[in-house]
Image (cartoon, rainbow, N blue to C red):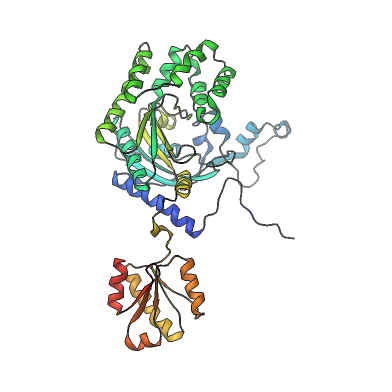
Length: 455
């Protein structure tokens, strides 16, 4: 018995209806990217592992999908290495490439590789799939799309303010209520300094980034395992549970971090960004969240995360400032800041809240019934004319029973059904049925085109 076909866990197939919905999301985001002056690029699905490794921290490196070398991938593996089953050592010898983990590191590689051809500041967007060898669960996939927007070659905080405005615009168009959480990595560095654990900044950020997932008690336990003292953990607690307005939180941070130069710089950057987006105006919530860490090691300034307010799901957008990322590729001092919309999670949110416009679920605007050879030929000419005028149209391919053809139109959510029968052929007209309104009318070809163009 043949094995039933399947797909890997953490991946998904998408039907035509689902792709219509996904394309609505992609098109909405892309339109906003263009509105803000960002230019599109693409990078390969696979990168050299030397490009990817060491950019996401120890946990991120474990989640990279690695690709076996072509041909005899064991040729460089000694017998003793194979017998030792040292996976790290074996992987380094068997794999030179990997699937991209995100779009930011490949973008940094792109900027360095083509720097002489790029005008700075360079604003780019990218909409492509990424892969992570993560444990699949609700809202977390092994293959998913990211929609990234980044600007490099500028230190100005206006870039951060613009990105927050872009997030507000995108979710306003999608009609999703969100809260944008904002923090600054320098604040976290300052906190690590004042609690006497400056050397544990990576461990601290990786741990507190999990507060929403595992809770404060488990975060504290992870910090103990990483070697933080009880005194340091105690000092950390009030900072992770700060209350009040954004202005009150910033004032509190200014006082708490007054002995840390780095921390105060982060507070001032945060204040500038918050005041800037407030001055521009916004519809979504903006929330200063000191527990926000975003565990990726390359963030150095502002960090951003977006949560949907009406659906229980993880972050649906995130990003931040990275001053040092391009340095590892030979271009130190090139600062950048960017955000990434998680298209797959946004798709899940819109599905749960049923926020798609009716037009998204329609395949074509009009279908012509097929009554036979002569009628089909006349209908095909009208279909061609309509398509030339920018109206999506199709002809049912078989002269099947009327009930079957109408059933097909209903299943495809096609609003209009056009009929050219024997009498319409003689009179040079088309009978048009509006399936939504339950009405029908007889039209000339020219009137039909105008009717459907404006429908």
